[in-house]
Image (cartoon, rainbow, N blue to C red; front, side, top):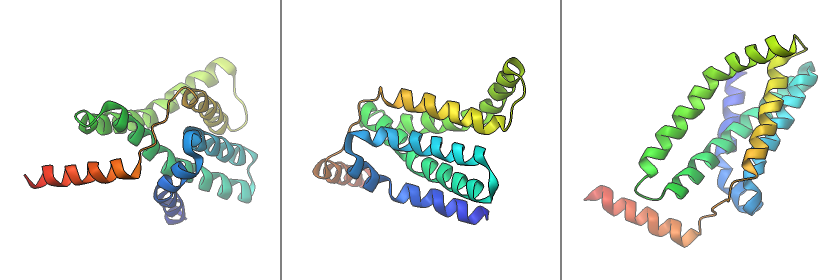
Length: 158
């Protein structure tokens, strides 16, 4: 089963550029909305909700992480791109370990409720969506990408 979810996340990553091209300036909301739908299905439960919710969350991860990394790298510029990826990766991994502590604190304040992890995921998805709406998306042009890749090749061979 774990293999299935890894494949779903990988498909999200493979389709990232197609999603970015199709959604144009709204790419920034694709991942948060899919995260939100996934957590809603997980909250509703049942085997269909669990499978569909897990697949949607995996797909959102597979499409969302490349979006965050690519936007951060493009905004930082060519010279800072090598520092952006490690910082974004560190932030993503840190959030995995901090979020349970945040959820525990929220549960202590708000009291116990049904499926707090999924509710917390929904709240974070909404915050992610609101934050994403503030991002000015940079859509790279194919010729610029080709020139940049060629420049990287020649720099790595030097």
